[in-house]
Length: 376
Ligand code: ATP
Image 1 (cartoon, helix red, strand yellow):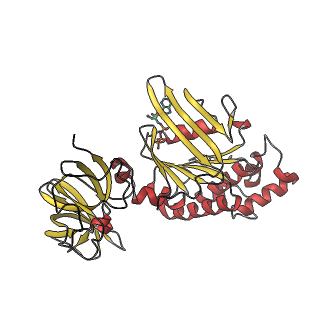
Image 2 (cartoon, protein in one colour):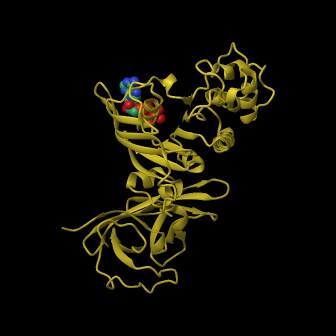
Image 3 (cartoon, protein in one colour):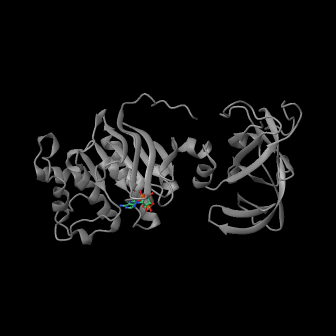
């Protein structure tokens, strides 16, 4: 799950100790990123975490106050945006309304000739085909839907054949259905061109669905950089665990058990587990196969672990607890039920309506240890 077959891939963009300060405000800090050639790399995080600033620094619209940025090993300090060979698409498509669709795409060629020796008209036509809008060159941008306008903006950004494509929340002005369609189209175009892409979004689902790797940012700094599956299954911190999808985070103290051997409870408990006291309830957490730094937790150590809602099974007494149903949201395919347990909030997914007190439990293997604080 965590092995990274592309770890040795050539680096397209490297940020080394990058920081950006505006007077008193720290927008980004200690940013170390290595974006690989041809990858779809996403910066995701809540509002104000520094995603846009990081993208603007890569584009060259801003210069870092600390650190360095390299493109393919070349320091790009002081290189203006138009000389960085990057294509940028912003949140508001910002097509020129007084120009046709074709002229808008052609505007992308104002600093450069079309690549490959083709004529401008041919280049515009090819790009409109690439973004699946053939034959629209003479249309008014305003006669296109929001999603189509965004694809034109992408064609304009791609026109000069940039080495790097930067997308800043390109979907955020669109409705949910259109967003889902457009993100698949963007991903397809990216794959077809094999172009290194840096994408900014605050939407974790969007980030997980399109990216080769994501950087989850918090307070100006990436907190975890990994493929979507790893970020989801093995969040590196409580913040990541809670930001990426629903999660149930537990904190407790390891208690003396049966010597750390097999629990012998339940057929799915084959891994070595430790018993953890969480608010008076003893819950078992598998510790084999987990990347727990500095050894296995033992009695007295504090651990924070998480269990995804789909792994918290209703009616499971084994390794379970009793919680109160507080509210439910019907989502169509599933219902998300919020439970209260000793002042904590838990989330489960069910198909059946729930009421009153319910028993929920999890397989120790489905608990992921986020943090361990070893007893002195
Ligand atoms: P959002 O999703 O809301 O756009 P973001 O993650 O993209 O957020 P940034 O726009 O990069 O975050 O902003 C990071 C921090 O830097 C914020 O606190 C913001 O107020 C501050 N900031 C960004 N640009 C400037 C600026 N030009 N002058 C002063 N402060 C700024």
